[in-house]
Image (tube, rainbow, N blue to C red; front, top):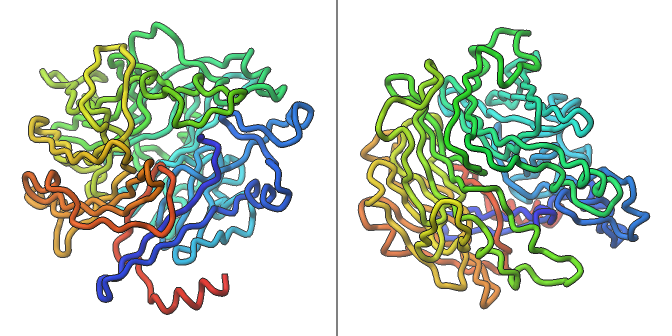
Length: 490
């Protein structure tokens, strides 16, 4: 499921001719190219996909395929497909053709030469046009995790010549993070290396994803506030101890697990405020997938097994390293199984009111620690100031909503509070009954507008499987005649 090759889908709008240009293409990773050439699986996948050829062809083969299938970022007029376990892969924004000279992906001008890991969730600081990201790897021998921090300027050049990195004794599961003007925000879920599962993975009889186990009966989760690079002196921040360095603020909050953040910012008192989509435990339902049964994913009772998510807002005082002294230091703002929370990119690191997220087809009420979730069948405009004013548009029971991108209306300045919702949501909706996919556009400006439904639905020329993350880029458009010329030659 998570080992699939990355399929990049792109839609470009031509408002003058009222046309869209749709195209999709698999990312030509090293593994993908070899698979196509041989007709076999050339590399193993992190989540259990094996090389073709049986046991002996997987025995002690520990190199895994960079599938470039998780997210996409456009920065410095360059487009990259991302996967957190390796290098990004660069694509032509028009044709989606892979253009890396090195089939392992881009090393970003040598930046990733020694540490190839580059998270699939970079953040943009709009004030400085800086791309902020991290790479994460665990040493399976020592069990020590290393987190390397990156800041790239508007020309995609590193803003530091020295290494800025963190070490933590013990495995932590990290997929996303958030930034404010002064802090990186990490939620730390500690675990340990399961040596039995590591042995199975090395022997070719198990998956690498099962090699890290979260600790049971943990009562607290740690939030780490790491200073942004402008607050760290040159050559002073290599291999900082994540839990003990006095520059890093570590705060205990009630136990939970999260994959995704919406945003983070600082209020006038310096408190750090962020929202995350969290659940009681990390469980992707992988234990329900029995390869011997060759059972399609859609026939697996997956969602009744999963823990539901909720969107929770935290307010943290970094100076006293504690939750802010307020009644609502922890606020649950949505319980309709929210995931893929997003905001308009210009509001990154800034105060926001609305979060846009997918949700389940219906409200699902579960007690703490109870299982039972639902597939993404709605799109929500979550009001973090007054959750009772949250708006929901629900799709049919056989339709499944992908992550939405916010598109500002012409002339709108979403950083002005009165104009924050002046825009549209654009996303793909997959129809599991008819095996079709629509591009859906929803107006979210003003009270009640989202619930009136789409302003436009456009059926794509091919079925697009339900995906992960995407983005919208203002002004990235082309001469459509130019596309015909370049596509025919690519």
